[in-house]
Length: 414
Image 1 (tube, one colour):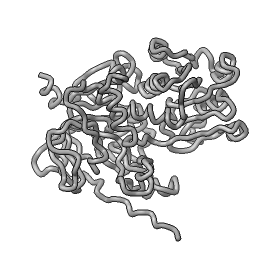
Image 2 (cartoon, one colour; image 1 turned 60 degrees about the vertical axis):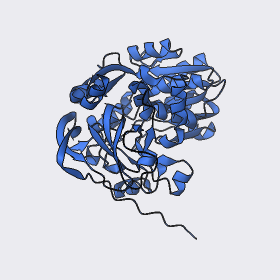
Image 3 (cartoon, helix red, strand yellow; image 1 turned 90 degrees about the horizontal axis):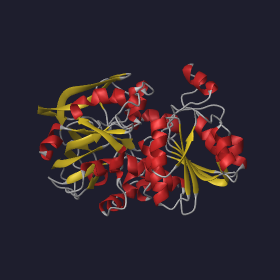
Image 4 (tube, one colour; image 1 turned 45 degrees about the vertical axis):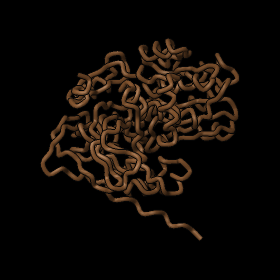
């Protein structure tokens, strides 16, 4: 007998505090973020926590909304962000693992912990935390809710704000030591966890030859963690000179797409056997060849398979490919024949964040991995609108990621 799919939760709405206000980064349209003054959130459900945010950041995937790729899934005034840390100010009556004053990492994925997917630790496939009927219509099923990440993903207000309401807080928050550097913890909220997920999907292990498409914070993190997992060699594929230099300084073999536009052929000239594992971390906006740029420009496709096609060609027979770059819609000219005939395993999906904690936190606390390197710039949270523009244009000082400190976070540093 078929099992009915659970009903989605409905407490995604923003319940405002009757008197208190806060600053928050609000989406106002294409390339328009404002620091608005909005009501502070309150407990909406007994499983909620209210977190006083100390540090937050901008994710590469936030640029999909900023650049207008997902305007049809946004509403003016939406609060952005899904990477933050802070201190618990208040908990609902059903929260058991957290209490007021705890320092926490806020994870992006909202998972119920009770459905069949959560019980298999496939948290990003949660049945109940995204009520979007449009998502179900597009994909045939609902996926998990995500903080601050479009109404396709539940319409949850994000944590690029002075306070955040965190649903199902026992699963969405990771309790963290109070004496660990803030940038280490902030790097664990999404980037490091996503990078580990990419390595897991690709099954990177000892002695592997790995190719990673993309040298942004996630791509570089994937590369560094691949070496930590025992990879023999890692090719770092990008066209940004600074990021390629960073990859080389971390021990990778850089591949400049601008110099080698037929990147798969170039990699195979160096590695005739092919890559054991390939991981795409450049995002669906990455187009290298004119046909895909043209098709996107006139609306014939919304994602691009340029990088994936190169990965399929460069990967050895029977190898593994992981897709991390936030593909949402459709693409053309996809090499399905090569994928099938070469016997490749291709996997993707949002990070199952809860699955990898506290393991990754312990890795950092024990000094085996330090993710703070990704923050090449620090700024006050109030300047986030300017930093969105800098990040989009690759103008963040140091070339990678900004650590944004709220007024509360600055007060604790004094």
